[in-house]
Length: 262
Picture 1: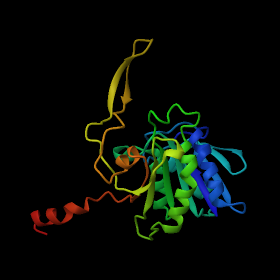
Picture 2 (picture 1 turned 90 degrees about the vertical axis):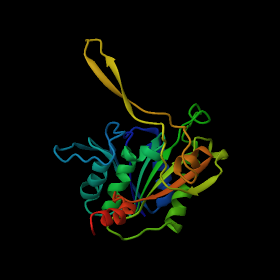
Picture 3 (picture 1 turned 180 degrees about the vertical axis):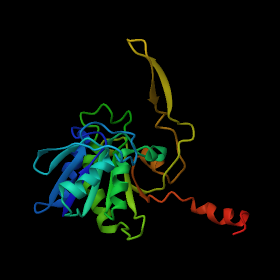
């Protein structure tokens, strides 16, 4: 199996090393793991592509490249430059430092990388590690992802739905904020919503006297509805959420058509 790996935390991120190990197990001794990851951190860039300026790409070692672009850029670089048309069997993005559940999905570069792979007609999975008081101070806060990542990907490959539609399914996996030994299992979930958690800005005055704004995040441990990704994670479960890039509000089509006379 040929696997392409990317992330949004950058080529030197510890979560990428975890995902490389997972990919190596999945690919097997006769397989190939190719890494094309951002040269610098690209958190929060969502599905951004560098459409209006070029990006530099550098070979760091065998099957290992860094690109000055987003995760989606890295997927495109992997497909059309690094692999020179030899399409991978699977694209994995992550393991992100912090959760990409609920509304975080919409900002996530990790999810953006998997989404681009799906738009290219490839099987793709985004993986993220929730942080919390029970794992953030561990020697390896990615313990749950490292301990359960391979089995989760294998289960998706064996039992997951992999369609051929225009907007193909891809998967968003979040590991709970626990040591691997305390993970309770896996749940198939929908995307949740933290009703009282919003991004905002915080002013800051630099030493030179200039005024800047820092983007601030909201609380990550607020409850979400039962059956959703963040709820499952906070209950100790791995969440697996099927997704598509189609943003149409399908539930509104019928009512709107009625109001507009068809």
